[in-house]
Image 1 (cartoon, rainbow, N blue to C red):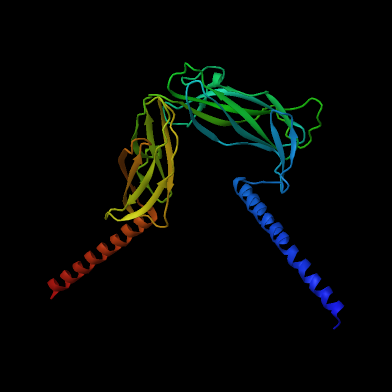
Image 2: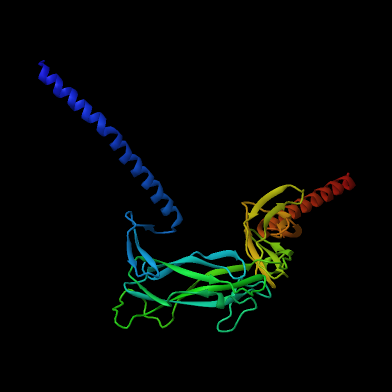
Length: 355
């Protein structure tokens, strides 16, 4: 091997060593981007962002991006479902909601605000008040840069929502919904969308609490069986937890249900995630419990945290599960057994008398 060849080999190895950190840096950057993409995918329900995540629209008041993957035709998605925030009087904040168009190309959407209220009988979580003001109206506190926008098929818009609390606002809760509805463009040819005159509306709830002294009060009224049914032939068992909010702000109660059989043994456990109850309203939380074989008397014990001051309510209800086929079969066998014993003893006494 000549000296010239040795010099060339050494020079080549030196160049490779210099380029190795750069390659490592590129690999590390790719891994970080992969983690970010995975996180974005986990936040989406049935679609994912494009890998390049490029903005396709920015006209200074909202931004949008194109989603990839399978796009279900026929609906649109609004998120998040609920936004909770606490502001001081005179404070302003901007939040975002997302609107994803999965209906058709060049679909126009409209934004509006309506107040919401709770239920007086627990039948529903919220109710829209329409053009009327709710008891805890938020409509004057919410605004948008514009009321309409147009999206392509598979486009997701990030809409800024401004919440402004007046300086003289009273402490307490204010509740409403940002409603997104879709309307048809006169100049668009819409083949995929259904030709129904009904305009779909999807809402994103806003729960605002203005700082200051407010009444936080509520309790668990009862745990009951849906439709007041106390006897079942088999599962599943429909259970309801009724909570009453008598305060001026919403609360988020949570807790657990324990099911015990007639011998006091625990045979079922259900953890209840927090659910909201609006001020001056009732809300029924429905739960379904079931297991493979049920027979006898059972007791449901509910331990519900009121959602403030760590106060826990304990309420209970009992029910019976008697499968008529099994019970009927048992009574039939018992009847045959008693009848056979009586016939045997009668025959035995007849033989004794004959002897």
